[in-house]
Image (cartoon, rainbow, N blue to C red; front, top):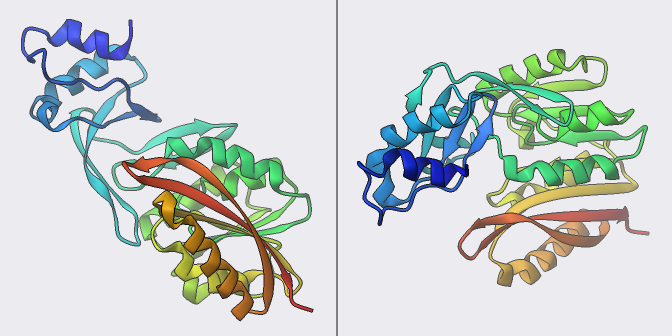
Length: 276
């Protein structure tokens, strides 16, 4: 039985039929993350309890209460049912992640992009992950390719999980973690590829990503939220910022997912070479 039908069957006597129930959930380890309509929010504990019954993997249920906030990327979720211990182990493409999805953002909607990126990386590269969090991009790359990864994370909680995940996946030989603001502690002239897995005004960090590349150039994967109509302006700004740093650039744009009405999560694959 489908999840929404299951909820309607179980809760039809207590939740009015005009209230829209969720059609699914995002499962991170043993934690189910729900997005509820406004009218459904007052029934969140009931929906949470029935969600525990729907799937035996689920031990904790949380509902979204607001957007991800600030440079620490703090998620807006509240526990409504189940185990209050929401630190969990999540498996994705042979990579194990320890994290707490109520304290740190972990987007299942980016899984396809993580898979795509791994296929682009070549053996022998040095890759700098400027917004590593618990290692969503960097650990996938290190697991699948013979590369060196430098993972930078500003959030101390995420950083501790990152260190744990490096050990959990036996990647101590290929992944180095740095704690701090990537604008201040990034290595210079070392990388063939840079990952910028941040969504808000990411282009402001582009000059620092260019500093990270080897002098001959490389590839930068810049993630950013934007309305579709602004893509042309962003491409122009990318070109100008690269030129100001002495690089010629060529950029491809891919939609990762729809972020909100009128807003897309895009990745800009920026290939740069040093100006002659």
